[in-house]
Length: 321
Image (cartoon, rainbow, N blue to C red; front, top):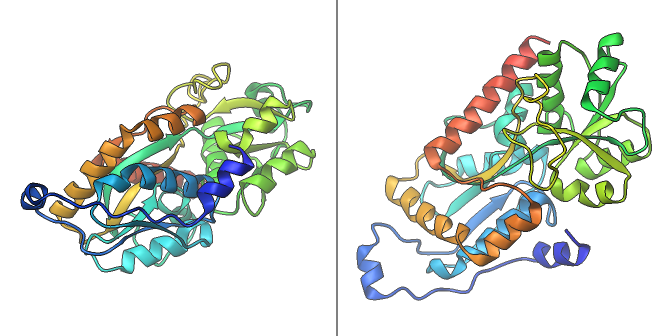
């Protein structure tokens, strides 16, 4: 993603009001009566923020009220999650969930919200592959090289993360358990700094999202070793999945909308239908094509199940380490 496009998307976005016809109003069981807050737990310009703004812009013509993206960064998305869990369940406050705040951080420490019961899932938008990367001209050329070195000596292989308890931290815990090895964790303040540490040779490997690593991979500064998704990524067809390599590890960074636990069926249906239509728009399809990721759609119940299942897997791996 170019700096220019990031700066544009990071600007505050408020959708133009849409005037519903009388027939449409009559058919709707519920409609918003004021602007809808779309809460993002990370800073403007990051991957989560960009996803929220692109889908909000695509969905804007389908709503009778403005869609307002609000960034409440901090605690790996936990501050935003707590805010939405305590919000009034009236359909006007949604959280972009599915990442560390939903599937990883609650496995590491107590949080002031219930990741399984404190929300009601509406729709999943994306499921981003988590790529394991090493220095382009470093000592590791394959994932097998990494595992072999880790087996020779515990904590001989260092891995960076975007912070303690984040999904990038948990992936190596789950992989370590599956492979019977122990990595040495080196936390950083975000995905960008962790990748720069790999490029500088300060740590051996790290986890990266496609939009974070694309330029560094293209320049040869980073080498993609594997991906922790269900299938190979179209943009990196030579990178094997961890499952292909014999490790039953599936750790994907999902993104989708959830609301407070008490939102009604009518509210869920209303938001789901419009966000699903927005996913069929040219703007969203072009965005997904640029990221090189597969369609991430899932219904609310399936999205919640996927989040709960990943949280359980990470919790189990932590208990046995």
